[in-house]
Structures are given as structure tokens and as C-alpha cells.
Image (tube, rainbow, N blue to C red; front, top):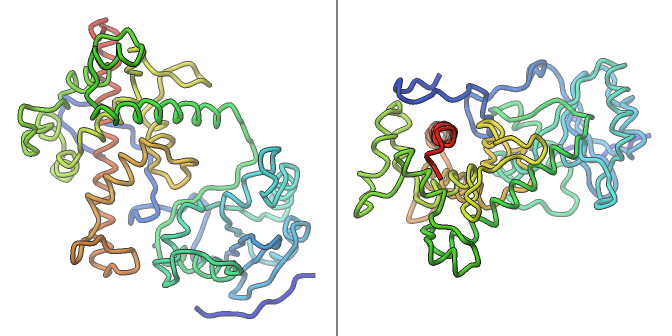
Length: 379
């Protein structure tokens, strides 16, 4: 029997014909005004939100909060006439493993819940816990969650889903470790490359490689950037950088591309070549070079479901997006809760342009790598 708790009251890149248009898959983000909820989800219909803490599930349904143990939760009898359930992926879609018994549900429990949901015609959706801080801010709560605030989080998430666009997807029960491990392995090697390159200002040469014990003449990442027209110009004047690329893009993307630093561009190039071997990088699960969408989703991490972020995401997405689209006041960056509705709209628009620009550059680098490698001109 569930326990009642005290109720609280508390939203086609067109390019020059000399460049290839990137794939048109959606790049959902928590603050993209154009983001859509997944097929089938309706904000107009009732939905329950569930959070987990203190070894209990806290559920908000029809504005009433109550607690359940995992056995009661998985049975879904408490859903009654509600046909939509939302919870964080870290709680509801990440099964217990030998590495982590902290997760509330085992793989068998997740599969059982999925089977029960299908029988009861209930759709289960997941959101990313990486969004939690922003959700709390925009819904008027402190950024950091304290012990025993599971009901507050349920109310914040429910209110946020009703008022703002948000990335979510349907519950998945097919856990292919090879795909996840391929992401982690690729990300770990990217971290190693970028941490080493950062030590030398992302300008590694023959002497540096030899000193590090590698018989390499030139940095493959710098060569790729030069072939793509994204290398540094003499004097490194910002207005003169990357003109050949920026001028082939729509006006909305030019400002974003101009804002890219050499660090961010090198981070993108490192997704295609390993400068310590001069070899093309491949995914361990397919043994093929990664595609643009795979890189955007898993390495750049433009989706909130980005697992462990990594150095590339920090260089490109965190620092780049924040510096490009953030609103400053009195020398400091405004927090989400401090933005006006107009400022929030402007931030969303600029963030969208920045991510589109990143995808354009990733597509350009991939096309350049494919073309030059096929012609045996790169090395």
C-alpha cells in the first residue's frame, strides 16, 4: 500500500553547393524551443512522474504525491487510468550491475515493468538526470538537491515538462554493452589525445612527438584542419579566421563559426584522426569511422543523454555554447533562473545556431577526411 505524503503546490540548413548539407536528425536539448516530445507523448494528457531516493519511489500523479517500494512501483497498479509515466533514465533505465548495485531496479525488473506497461497500454518515457539542475533553476528551486527532496523534484519536472520543450525518449530494454563500451572507449581515447595536445597549446610538431616517444612527422589533426580551411591564419585575427568556411554557411551560423576557438576546432579534428599514430579513428563496435550523428550524440554530447561528458564535450559544448549564448550582467554569466523570458528566448536561439554550426564543421571535417584519405593525399 502506498503512503501519502504532504502535498505541496509549488517548454534545412542551406549551404553553399561546395559544402555538403549535414544529416537532418534532430539535435534535442533541454532549452531548444524547437524541440519536440517523442512520438506519442502528450502534454495535454495526464502523466505521472517518478523519482527515487531513500530506497523508495516518490510518484506525482494527478498532483498527489505518494511513496512506493520497487515491487509496487514495477507492478504499475498505482497508475490507474493514467497512460503516461516519466522518470529519469538513471533510475528507470539503468539496471543494477556488479559495478553498481545503487540502481533501484534490476534488469529483470525493468523488463517486467515494460511487459506490464504494454499489457496495461502505458507508455514509459525517460528524461536525463543531467537536466536536473537546469529544471530546478527554471522552476524556482535551488540548484543543488538536498536529502529528502524527491517530491520537490517530481513537481519541478512535471511543471517543466508542461511548460518547456524537453528531450526524452521511450523506455528501452535492449541493453547492448558493446555499443556503450564503444562510446566509452572512443571518448577515453579522445580525452587522452586532447589532454596531451592541451599541454602543447594544440600545436604539436615533430620534436614534441619524438620527445614523447612517437615517430610522427606532423600532427594529423592540424593537417586535416588546414585541408578543410579551418587552420589558423597569420596573426590569428579573429575576423580573418575560418572565413572560407563561414562564408559558405547561412548568416545565422557565421557568427557561431567565427566564435570557435582553435581548441574547439582541434577537439573536432581529433574525432577523425589520432595524431600519435596518424591513423583514422574507428568505432570498436563497427570497426568503421564514426558518422556525424554518432559523434554529435555521443562525443560532442548535444543530447542530454550523453553518459560521461568527456574533454571534447567540455571544450566544444560546455565552454563554447556557454560563452557564445550566455547572457552576462556585471561581468558574470546569468544563471537560468535570472534570465527574463526575452533573454531565455535569445539564449535558446543562439544555442541552436551554435550546435548547428558544430554539426556543419563536423560534416565538413568528415567529408575532407574521406576525400583526402581516399585520394591518399593526407599522409
